Length: 303
Image (spheres, rainbow, N blue to C red):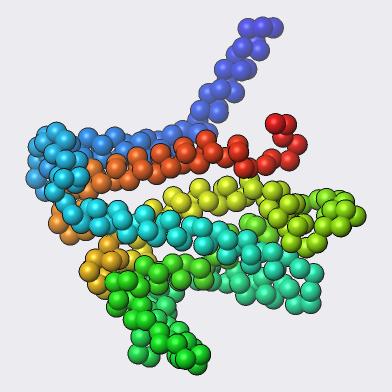
């Protein structure tokens, strides 16, 4: 009987491995394999057509000591992440709180604010380039109605990154939907108890709503942080096909890495850049995970 049960268990194990075999093959071929290759290639002067020559840590040394554009691209990316992540998170929470009200036509407004999240990326960037045009754009036209002289937006190095951050705020619909779902899951008993104690709307929002949705805030912050460091498409389209904008103000890390790989064909150099980016994102993610128990509240959790 025991031998028969062992045989059945072995058959089930074999069936399980067969079912996951396509995923394992795909992971080894398209994820693990390229990772190992890129790490090895980051120590060579590989340029696709030539033979790999081992150069040790020369690529990494050159990035930190000789390449000023490396530091420029890193600064541009950190600037974008440090400002866009908090603003988009606060914007999405504020918007979801407004759309969580029980008023007529609320479904129409929810659809309207979510719409930018499903529009095509390149098309949206082209539209924003026209809106932000300093001469004929709608944004400066609206500002002029209030007596404000609009900036040159994408043509002024001081305004290029704020332009992208401003545009990013327009597409918070995806995060807004997550926050809206989490707010609707907060128990009404908590609000009723707070009302009995005399709490007003703001106190209920900051002392009940925000603590109860902290797991979603944490998820959004971590994913937005990772996504912010991977900004590429916006910078490529809005800086004349990857030129980097005026004074390299839109030369973000991924854009510079792409130029090194596919314009200058310094694949080894670009792969060294990719591993530096991996280490930065990994450290920030671990920092967030360590910090999370201090402010993230899980319902039913005992502390």
